[in-house]
Length: 543
Image 1 (cartoon, helix red, strand yellow):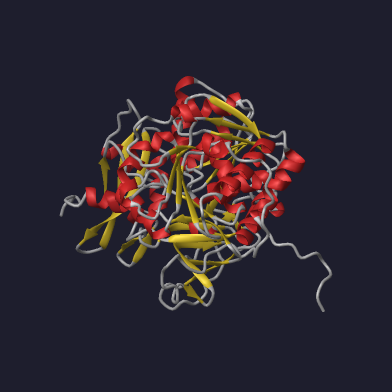
Image 2: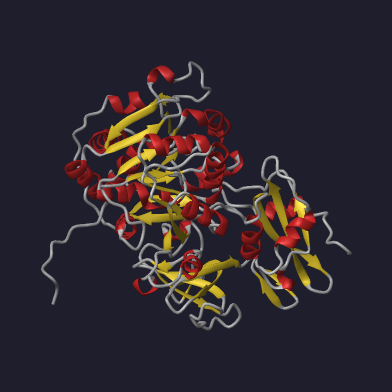
């Protein structure tokens, strides 16, 4: 016996239709690459998305063809999110922080047919366009008068002219909800990047989950600043979920320095912001140096890499801003866990609650997870102490990469995340390390994240990375690489002494190396492989 419910495919066009019909006047604010603040709303986004769909209809594209974007977070990028996917094409968000050779490889691998880019990325496009033969049309996200007379890119057109000639009348097509909606390539820390292809169905399920109170808890009463890039795993579902709930969106464009982000939060009454720790570090540094406070910000979502305890303490204790610690992956759309306390934990004292909040959190409904022994594959207990390889499965988790042999990717339907984690009896997961970064010393494992968190709590430390170095007796020993705060004076001995009574003696780093900067990847994460290469001639003390 089947149910008697209406059978309607879950399509991204449903989101923009809903936003226009029920939340047309909710604001969309953007700091543009032109330097000014642009004001729009969901009704305007919906109309322009239909113009995009009509414009794409004139480009002789097939259903499922890839349309690439090389753009900051902005109202134009938001329009493209819905206009491209809603019309049956595949939105392919490109990461502008990649090397030109890697970028052109991705464009060719995805077989992008059209590429739209912000004018700040014109030099990058000029460097790669001749190497991207699949791209039939290049479009600059600007007004016609801002288009350079001689860009060197044949047939380059301005976005506003491209869509301006189109009608706002368009009926979104209906098709299989399992059709591809968008794609995003992994950051490619080892080998070539891998393409993750999301479906309309997975995207809508993920967007619904993100809105839940025990997830990102987004509503029409929020003013949301997604600092996390729209080219990074679809900005953690925020553009889609904001359309579903009718939230105000505030886009920072390319101005991600501490002052610009803080000013935008205050000017636009932002209640919730989301980004990686490196962005918040810059903003908090600006606030501390200038004696600033927040007037509206209530919540910040921190993901991409672990939130240092010192950062969580600063947000909560000094500025009164709640921190939602989250974890996920490009392969997971990306949300996997969010750290929201359970009802039975309300009675815990402040220190006990803080210890829980530093974990990556509980699985979002739709995600299942387990930890297994790396050798035998046997499932390990949820005791908060035993750590193992973290595996996940669910309706918005990848089952394969684009154009790759995926026959051995899943293990009995489970995706191997590459993370090492513990899970406590309440279901709170904590990443102890990436499997490739965990330090094996004398048969014991040392979490590089734990070492980094202690170092980051030192008042003179701006950033810290822990890596393992070869040792003839212990296999590996940890060192901590430190960037000092501007004007700070601190010695190797000061840093090492700071570890006393905070961890076991055998887990204390053998050395401290001071550097001007720690290499960051295209998504703001520390690149430990590059750091190891940078320190390839380094020798541990006494060796």
